[in-house]
Length: 99
Image (cartoon, rainbow, N blue to C red; front, side, top):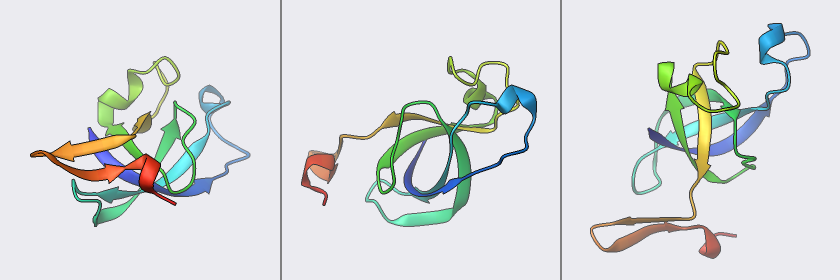
């Protein structure tokens, strides 16, 4: 599982029929301190995440394990919206304190 920040949306009007009904979001991978670490990733949204939110996402075969993505050709899924992240006793992210 990885941490990411929602930075955009992806709309595809024509797609594989089994992908119908999925909402796709664009993520930027972040580290445990909230700093951007990698490239962009498109992921299906299984939890109703929004722009700017920090999320927990999975890739590869793990992305097909949610109810929404089960047996679909999906390689990335958002499976949680992060409310609080604490590392070694220090809070590195608190959704209630953001914007």
